[in-house]
Image (cartoon, rainbow, N blue to C red; front, side, top):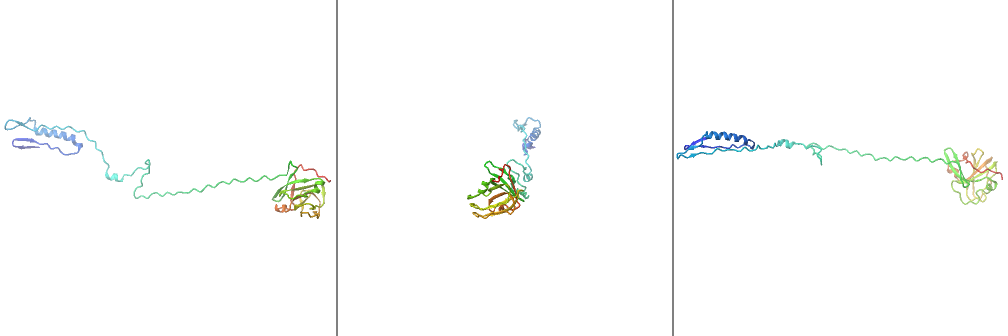
Length: 258
């Protein structure tokens, strides 16, 4: 603006206060104002002939300031963190209940039982030591006996005399050359016995209990071709009795009458 006082013209430039971003615009405005103040004159002459005046002001244009746009405070307050941030999980939104996680316990693995293979049924057979395995069966019952063989007269008369013990599944098989009705006794025999009389069809005709040292003759009352002696009670323990079938192996020695 321009103000007259005592013949001196003063030009006062007031820099408007503004943001840094308007400096360049103010520089242009200031130039226009200075030109208006001086009106193109070189100066004003005082009464003493001296020239007084305020030199023109120049302004260096400042580099336009970079303005950083701040987010709206309301937006900052409601900004939601991005889920999946490395090193953690996003915080839950206030007021939202945390999801309930239900853990289902897996039932323990049940081990699979390996079926036990059924034992191979024992078959009648010949052993290299002069003994044989025979098989006695009746219904679902089946048992094997390892026997010595008495096939001649001397062996049949000796039988199991003087034995002090007999293994549970051991015995003696008597072979005859023809069907007979001869009786058996327990002279000099210390082991109580089941005496099974077997017909030509290999079926048990009768079973007699031999009492140690008893010399009473024991007969089945009919013809038989084989006799099997085992420990007393053996047939009962295996669930068998008269009518049981005795399966003989091959290789048995031939029976003689003397």
